[in-house]
Image 1: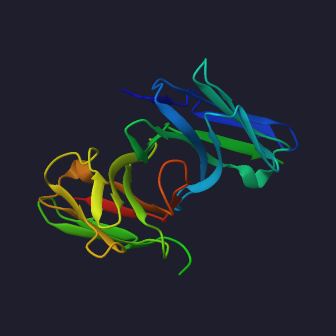
Image 2: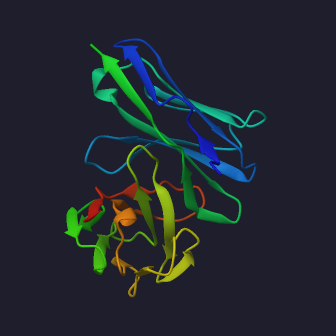
Length: 113
Length: 114
């Protein structure tokens, strides 16, 4: 039972353009959402988060949008840079176990110069 | 160090052997997590400690897996009678609290069971 889904395994974008990574969830108890970035042979690195009381959170080039009614969140990166090329995971927590993060399968982002 | 440290970075073991994986969390972080990541998948939750106690061990796949955090800092993940299916990257993370705080991950231990 995949409670957090990233349906696009990969995304290719030109440098300077916008990257949009999508994530869907099924568990209505989730109320905190995070995005992590992962380079090869490294652990995931926290990028940005959003609480369910908000619908948008922005940090520099990164913005996360949350649509609770659709159980959907997205990460926007603008402008995209080659150094953004990595695997991006969305994760969710909430309900009976706040400490537990449920991750999506990841999306490989490639930003071409 | 400033970050989460995991040792060893790589471990190759024979099927049936016992292994221990160590995690040093960020100093002062009360919450510690273990995840397992297989190729092409996202990290999968195993267990979470708040202080010395396991607050949620619902992700441990079976009784061959066990984790401890006796002094509320360093944690050890123990796997008995290893099987080839246990091969994965084992990730440890820590956070300053729970419920809405981000977790910081170590680089992982790549376990290969041959």
